[in-house]
Image (tube, rainbow, N blue to C red; front, side):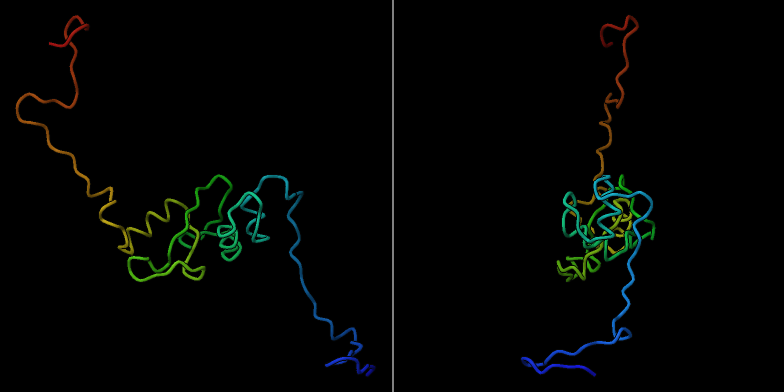
Length: 149
């Protein structure tokens, strides 16, 4: 072994077998960072100038897939950030408690876990029934078509 005693730990000449092998993922096809595919580059690098940092980190962590349905995100998909443990049930806003979902998957997950805030629940809004005396939901035109009967 060849070594020198300079400083605290000294220097050691390593053998070729001591160098760890680091594998790199090849860039697909003719992709470029400038081609506008935010989802691909965010999930590959974990950052992109046109993607918010927290979304890019979540894309990289999830390997470009939705945690609910397991499908890959496409550039045209609407992505929403979801709390794995809802805030209404004690969850915190930390990266380990956040996940990226398709918008429709987020709606489905929210209804299933019961974290939907009742004040904003669209399903609880009901329309008033028509008044009993002559009110109709659709207006009918007169015979001549220019005025109401």
